[in-house]
Image (cartoon, rainbow, N blue to C red):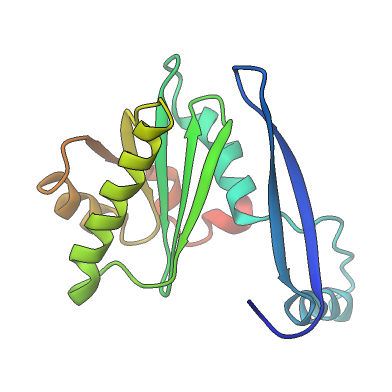
Length: 168
């Protein structure tokens, strides 16, 4: 929840079983206005503001080519973790945002949240085949998770660069 007016976008999600869903993205207008202002001050016109989850889902088919896999993609940032569970074709099954950093005293919490997410997918009649980590500290996090979870944990090498999100 936040104060003030919201801005939003939505994305229709069509699943392989012919069912449909909607992924709704909402953010405070107070965050959007400065972005537009800064762009205009630099003689740029923003054409589209993409939700992070959309960028992540579009990236999945470029890193996985096997059929029918379900991937848990976790993007590690300084103060949050964005999780997208998607098929290898980029079909978003669901999204989670964890509002903490994965390191130090929160490492166990991160592991538990990953395991809970995997169990939730399983309750929905799907199985996560692999976990893929993105972000500057993805290699460190992968080493830790490999000793704690029973799934393949890999690192998206393209997403180790801190400018990856600007280019995506």
